[in-house]
Image (cartoon, rainbow, N blue to C red; front, side, top):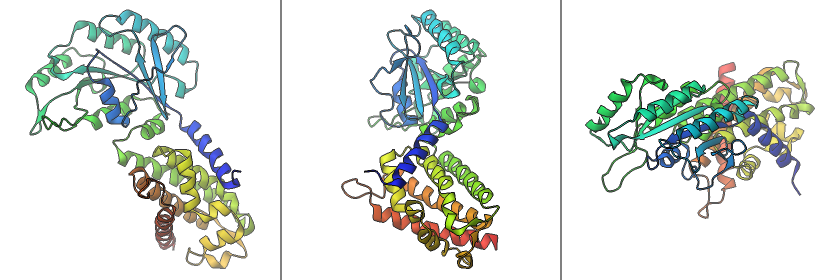
Length: 374
């Protein structure tokens, strides 16, 4: 038997997931250049799974693997440099068919990978990139497995990058991005260049997929936090608008859908699965879980001066402050959980610690919000 709050949260969670959509990335390059390693480094371990996924179109050699808010399109049975015409033909058909679909079902960006120490970039590879551009697909060119020492790239890789740039290819930033995706215990090589690839991807991706790309990537936590703050600001504004004509105190739960939507969006950003997010939400906020007048009264009393409205109505300022504080407290919880904290030794969610963190942050934000509005 699912309790009413969990069911309401599930509905919002699913709705916000659909609204956030999916970022679809095509990745090309010769066998052995480290495509899967690059994907896993930017989007999380084991994202580039061994599963083939589903064909993009009937009879296509392009396969789409869906992993949360990320879609990865790769070739199966075809190889760049040998089957270019077949790949471009399949891609051309797929792009035409996808344009009739919602944005989340279209192809957004391509990464073309070249191993940095191969010391060569063939004319067929340049032609392949030009064909991708002709199809309207932005291309980020990545040199993989690039050695770096004392902040300097290997000279052979630098020479290769300069040779590629001289071709004037239609790629993001007009240049290849030099990367190393995985730490090498033997040589001590550290990962580098990954955020630059991600930033370039954001710059060329179409409007409307930023949220999905932000949620899918795992290396830029500042970008996730920035997006979460936007969600909180929108929710606080919506709560203020809902209470512009003061809400009768008994109907204060009219704000709950706004707050649940905000919480669901932030949980999606941090790739927290529904089951865990629901437990976190239950542990975090009594107002949302119980929804009754007594619960709302208890939380509103945390706002200095709000006790005077307990028998009357909630106005825009109180609704906004209350929702903003909830959002900031929930963000703190999501960030800690995403870092692998707030769990027991058995890796179960520690509800008591979740509640403690949320309550402390919530009170702090209410106090700050009240001082700012005073």
